[in-house]
Image (cartoon, rainbow, N blue to C red; front, side, top):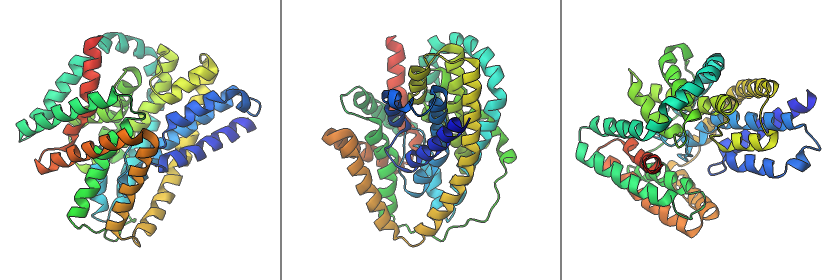
Length: 397
């Protein structure tokens, strides 16, 4: 138990680092752990090691809201949340944006655990029912996304162009293609628009209350969409957020942030249920766990769920404290200089992670990212960059 507790604590620390560091993904850390399992197994038991991986993964889903909000630096799970979070930041409510995302993560964690016994029973039936209809589902969602726009032709063109571009990028030999693609579409493009508008960060508020119960509908939808992510290949948190936003009765910024935070955490936790009931591995963390355990027993499953609960409870407190620290720091920073620094940092990370061709992707995706607001259509249409490649993949099967 002491070694397991130490592994969970180590996992939480690793999740804090990955969550706060743009470009450093948990998949990289998980694969590194799996590759060095012989060395680590001399210190920890195999069950303790996988508990640490889950703790890291859950912690990451809580902490990654901070760089997305304060720095505008996305990963594949926080891309869409940048837009409303950045707007709240520029209204002095950056900490509130983080807290709303946190409320979604914490609420979905609790609801997912409640839903877990049912998920284990129904996943085999759900998977067999929808697995052959994923392309149809995504085409329908895409059509609804475009039809919801006032300017349907520009929206369709942006969706199609970004989708075509995303297809070629994701099927290229570029390493870590998602980083330059999403950083340009949703990160740097947002920062450049803010610089052009000469925006300044106002004093930030930190005194407010967010009651999870008031967002019970977005939390419930996030668990439903997280469950979809956990069993269907090719459906990530960002695609699920597009689907989930259409199911919401209230589509304001607050509800959307709760939704995206909830999907991020729920998909990670419920992927355990998919692994245990379907033997399906939908993310890098679960792949690493499968390689280490060679299958999961009931006791292993219970330990992993408990690790997720512990990590989520600790991470909620840590996220609030670090967010308050960011609020204090950001007040003293020149906003334009900060935006330029983040752009330079993302560009440097892009060169390191994806090479010179990654810069080409970054520049092109930035131009695409700026085209949506210039045409006065929602930037969620840029999710065609991920949705269209998935549609093509399943049509070819």
